[in-house]
Image (cartoon, rainbow, N blue to C red):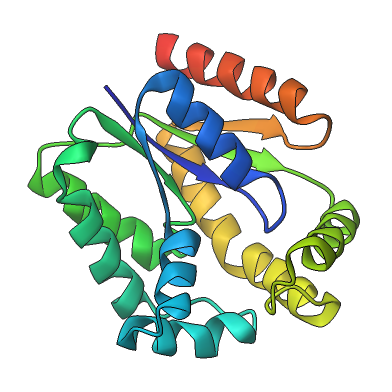
Length: 192
């Protein structure tokens, strides 16, 4: 059983690598971003609330995000493990996730951080915005999201590093090469 997180700045390839890890390890990948976007598209009350924050490049408030993650982690398909993508993003969310896991006598096995240079990420995200037409991907919003990542999420990374469960992998390069590095890093972390 594997319970893990994938963390990295916007555009670092978390979604792509999460799908590949999910397939290879047989665990469900849970992307808070995908859940938010589905709610926005469906114009649900949660989606309308989340959209206001997402369009500005801000994090959706913990109160909304935490409830969504607790509900999702209570579903039966996570019993053999899971891979969270996009959560936790703040130290308060780390504490909340600890509570959720403790309720089920569980803990995280590994936290995988994809690393990448900010300028490379801006270039990558602007290219993706042209391809997909995402309203939350323009240069000002991208740089704001990167600033938020550095201000808030790096504290999350430090917290998991202190616990000895953080594994860092370079997220730049061809997708297959990054996947190979990721899988080797997970295997090494699980063997430790």
